[in-house]
Length: 327
Image 1 (tube, rainbow, N blue to C red):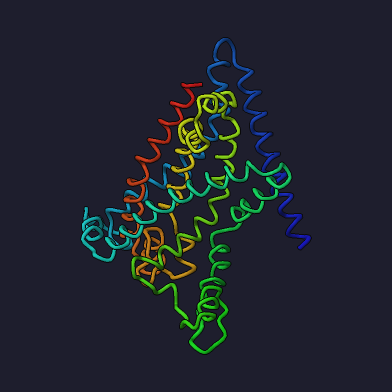
Image 2: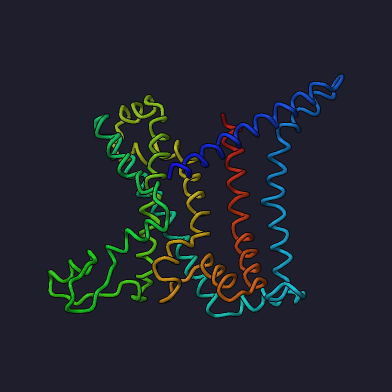
C-alpha cells in the first residue's frame, strides 16, 4: 500500500513538475524572439499543448471511428453504408433507441425538477442544517455509477418465494402478503427501465441542487421584495420572478445531465446487462465491440451517438455565449 501511495505521489509531482518545466522552457523560447513575434507566439505556446492533446485524444479517435463505421467487422474492407442500414433496420436496435429516448425525456427533467425543489426547501433551513442536508443529498454524486447500481441492488434484490427477502421492495411486499417480484424483468410500461432511471437520478439530484441553489441565492432580493409589495404570493414569486432569473442555470443543468444520459452505460450493464428490454445505446456499443468483436457495427453506433449529441453541444455553446454577452 505504501509503495502504491508513493508511486501515486511521484506520478502527481512528476506530472505537475513536468508540465511546469515544459511551459517554463516554452515561455523562455518565446521571450527570446524579437519584435512582435513574442506577442504572436506566446498565446500559441500556452494553448498549443492543450490543442495538441485535443487533436490526439479527441479529433483523431473521432476520425478513426468514422472511418471504421464504413468498414466490416474487423476493419479490413469497406462496406459503405451497410452498417448504418443494418442498424436502422434492426428492430432490436430501434427498441434500444426507444429506450434511450425514454431516458432522455424522463431523467433530465426529473433531475432538474427534484434538484430545484430540494434547493428551495434546503435554502429555507437554518445555516447548519442547510449545509448538512445539502452534503447528504450531494453525497451520491461522489459514488461511481457501478457503486450506485450495486447499492440499489439491495433495494431491488429478489429471492425465490419462501426464502428471506434481502431486497427492500420485496421485503415490504412480503409484509402485505404479496409474492416477491424480480423487478428487473417487469417490462410493463417500461417499469424496469424506470427503476434503473431512479438510480441515475439519485446520483445527479445533488449536482442539480448545488448549481440551482447557488443561482437562487444570486437572485436580487429587491426583485423578490417588489413582488411581495405588489401582492404576489410565494408561488407566484417563485415561478414569475425567481425561475426566469435562474433559467440559464436550469438549461445548463438540464443539458449537462442530458449529455450524460445519452451516454449511459454503467447502470444498465451492472443491473440487467441490457436484458428484459432495458438495453441502451452505450451498452449495445460495448456488446458489439467487445462481445461480438464487430468493430464496424460498434463504430457506426458511436457515430450515430455523436450525431445525436452534436446539436445539444451546439445549443450549449450558443447558450453560454448568450450568457457571456448579457453580462
